[in-house]
Length: 116
Image 1: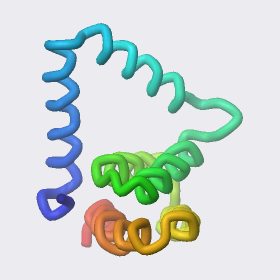
Image 2: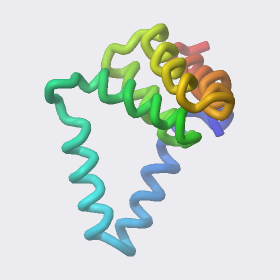
Image 3: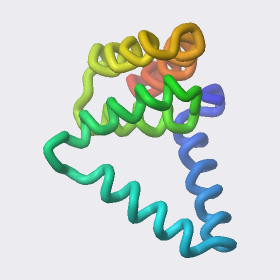
Image 4: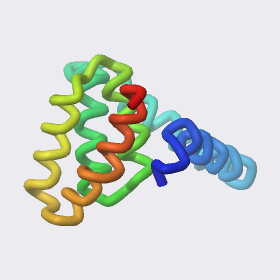
């Protein structure tokens, strides 16, 4: 998926939410409100919240969440080391499936964000 690029993946996700909103506006609105509240500054910083979310994305094999939250973590000041450590913790719980996402999708997203 990342071969298409981070921006393309994020665009596909946003377009999908837009299509859903046309058919289920109340559901889409409620979801956006809920996730917006979850990702607001609080006792945890936005960086920390995105690191948690990217680890959960790695664990659950969700490529869009991996891309979205890796970008969110980096955009909010996470270093490459912090991103990789979050992925490593996820792999401790998710085994080979999580590790395969960390060494493919996550590393590709990091490389693209760094401009490699």
